[in-house]
Image (cartoon, rainbow, N blue to C red):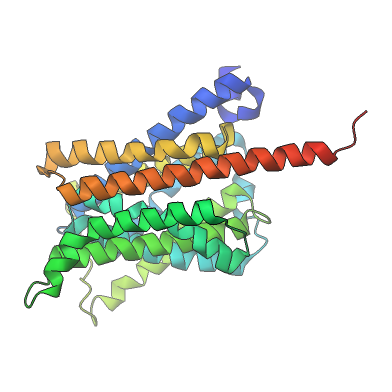
Length: 329
């Protein structure tokens, strides 16, 4: 019975599914933050393209394990829109590269907090690409959130504006922002894919295509200044494998969490990653978040919660409207 409930969440009671969904979401933030910490370590000696390849390739291990247990291996290669998967893969791989560059150049909390700009960017992109209607409330929340992003970026970019002030942290801040932009575009692409593709195929094709895109950086390292791939020593190899496993595990936990409870309930727990980033950054890397990160991060989190709350209210209104027009009896 327990095994069936674990593998097939629809068989569990509502309260059990909800609590499990929240716990899985929190567990995913731990997995992703652990992965980010290891990326920061590995990125000091291993080129980013190689780290991205290992992140994507070894993430297939937990994916195949779960699909095998469920007997759903065939769903991973059941494709309806190959072009859509390719777009998602290229955008996702680019975002991963930017994000990993940021993790090697910035304190962990800074990189994670700037990444919170992605959900805010999804709102205007959804209007532009998907034609969604967004009212004043959400536009206000997004505007406030972007003010928070500017506050976080301000010390990095202000120093870069001075003569000779450009440094690694300024480059890292821009890379983190670029990663957030790519993540927002990837979210829009996933919204398109979910109407025709299975969850297994979306996750599998993302990992596979990211591996292919990252593998292209191997020969480029000999002609461009992007860092040549290295033959990892045993410690580096172990870290690279664990990065992939943590990344794949985090993605599976995230997917499973949203299967068990409403998005509006689960989404706010994403901000637990800031807690883990601050703790790990302080304990392992001796990073202390600056006042701009604390203030800007609080603004971004508050605006994100406003957007999530508004989505929840609109969802309830849509549900009531559907019930009102549904014939009874």
